[in-house]
Length: 461
Image (cartoon, rainbow, N blue to C red):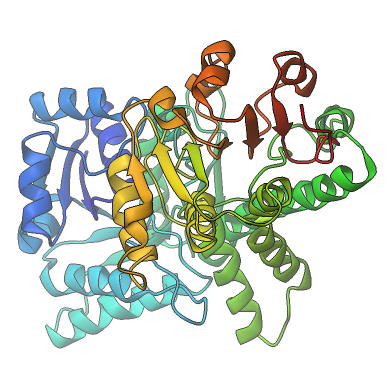
């Protein structure tokens, strides 16, 4: 099939590459000529595990191509996937300007019937707005008889595992309104696109457009709620001497609950959960309702980002001036270079404002982290003088007053503890991801401050 993907960000590139891998002819549109030029020579703007190999293979096979020519992109695919960004506005609402501009361009240049698929995460009712944007362009061209159908097909991709999620989805949600011939043609076409990913059992969930749009937000809101719920319990666990890891295993073994998204830590980040929780709250407000649980979820998450900073201040008596901290992990989660809403940004900024220096290491995200910190610290021209990016975890640890772990990269799970102890000025670890066994760290001679493990007030070694 001939498919056009509008947008070459995270969702667009993963979708395009995985669909090309199944033999489709996929053309990606981006209005940035610079990005298109980079993509054409095989340079990805994001890091995603397993993506580069598929990307290079499908470019070489001629199944994946890129353009900044809108007319060409509209002409190419009967099916037009809109996969552009929907950033949060100042009021928390999703900004639909890029989605609606993409839809208008399709309407402005289409000369045959199209299926227009909203792949971007969009609020309930966006399908109607997309339909209006396309139709207004057709009306201006006196092409009222030119058919099109708007479909909602939200993505459920976990950063760091997006290729695997796309290739082996647990569900494929498709929203199509109506029972007329265009609707049936759209259902048939979408079923054909996803047939290679749907062979073992039927994962397709057909519903109306608004329900599909709402499903995406509901899923992310539920996962964010689980994270904030466990983080609040973890903070209480620290005060009363309870090990939240044992609690996680105890409740996770209940099949009604399960183990996923029950890990205590420094809070959620990334491009989805923060934005989608805010957007769903905004939708509720616009309809005269307050989502009190989600408001609490967001508040807990914002506070959680600084819990580790409080532990650090308590350990060092509140005075961090001229202290140096090694920080392992900058991306909001492992196997990605995404720094959007990463807890590390809040923590680093708080440490620097308290007078500390930081030595940073992340296996993948250093480049994006530098950009993020330049923005975060722009109000203080000398703040970046307190930041050193290192080429290895041990280089970062050298002579630091303590180690702070913020991302659970696998490479951090089994370090050379003896070498680490020698490298640090003080054998102190603040673990925002609960990577280690507290008893093991005590035996190794470390002061260990995880989250919710009931050891925050341990005596110093």
